[in-house]
Image 1 (spheres, rainbow, N blue to C red):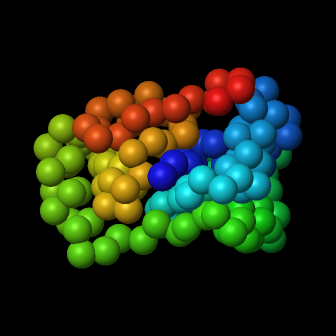
Image 2: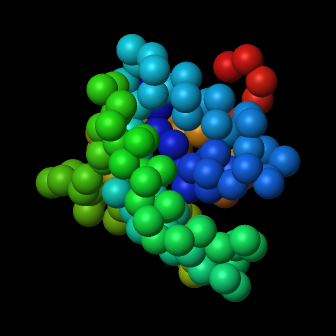
Length: 143
């Protein structure tokens, strides 16, 4: 399974971003494909926080715009919303000693991915290389 990180959704949403086309195409390929893919639940809130925050995003998106993108992504027949389950805490507990501060949030995303068997995360965040068992795939053309 392939998981998608927040920054990929942000770039896919923000047409003015130089990474927009690559991110949009990556999400579109996943959404229209047969391969199981997932969106970690933590990515949902972080996406809305980023694109609706005037201190982070310019121009700022409305909440309705942010939710509309998420509705579209989650409507894909091959997508799963990755929620913490019984194995989440033991996996997260094992990942946390390698990070601190704001990277603990990334550890939560990594843990829920690993719990659901998502061994690949599409992201432009190099910090995910810190988590064993999770391979990072960037927005490279043609993947």
